[in-house]
Length: 285
Image (cartoon, one colour):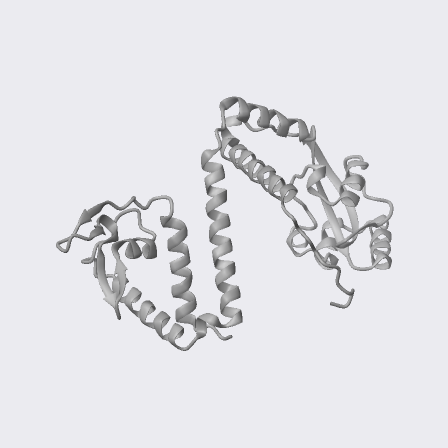
């Protein structure tokens, strides 16, 4: 099904508006209209009808994702845009597009993503994170940090034989930085003569970090080191004691860690209680 750019853009705006407005929209009040029927007012006042289907202030609010009622006199075309969308929606339904299998699948995924996002927001909003929680998580993260950070250069190539040839050139006095710039397939470091930023061992793939940690300052690996990226020649430039940031400097990151853990624990509980079945499929499917 080909998606027209206008509809894709407008649809994305509507979805983004839903996410932005869900936590800020005010609860509508009720009044009795002239015919004695209770009608919702406030930001759900009907501002237009399209073939009998109402467009409300709440719709405008949700579509724009604004923190305040956008009103009708802003001249930004929001109401006209919603009228156009409603006309297109009605015509799509008239043509039976709402029953199309792919359409139903996409709508289900939109609903799933929206509800999952709202639930995760609710979980984190209800989560009470105390100063003690932050301090405990800070200590946990500090304990996981290595005492030493490393700065190294490397030359990355695809074949072990080429790596051995480059090692031979280094033994003959070739400049490491020049070889890295000429031969390394790691574009980010090659342009700097193979130099890498300061790193903790856990930031690198195990084969690389194990080889780097085993080196003395100024020493180069005697043999090529294989990782999933290719073959490395590594030279250790220097080491330093790892710096530990103050708690207040990483408060936001600690909150994110605690929120993510709460969501993961909640999800694990749901998994344990759910009946999840994954049918076996032939290997070629």
